[in-house]
Amino acid sequence: TKKLVIDFCFDGADDLRERFFKEKGPGTIKRVADKKYVYEAELYDPIGLIPWIRSFGSHAVVRSSDEHTVRELIRDNWEDVINLYGKK
Image (cartoon, rainbow, N blue to C red; front, top):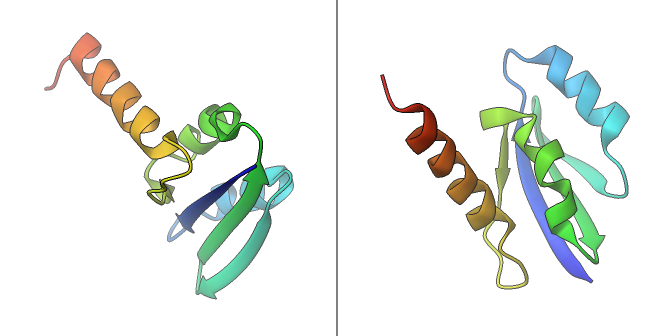
């Protein structure tokens, strides 16, 4: 398994925070400050969570890891989207 760690900050996004708790899946949540949480999960394929992670936009930040490339895959995907639709 591979350990996935994500920092969540829900300042001004209570609706997303509620959804986060409803959809957290197999991971655990640790509150680290007001409206700030750390999500940890041991997964065989953390790549499968990428659509869920992206749905939180900038409220979710995947920590870098030697065990997986989730952070890099999300970054590369956003770069592809920017290149496809262009910057204003």
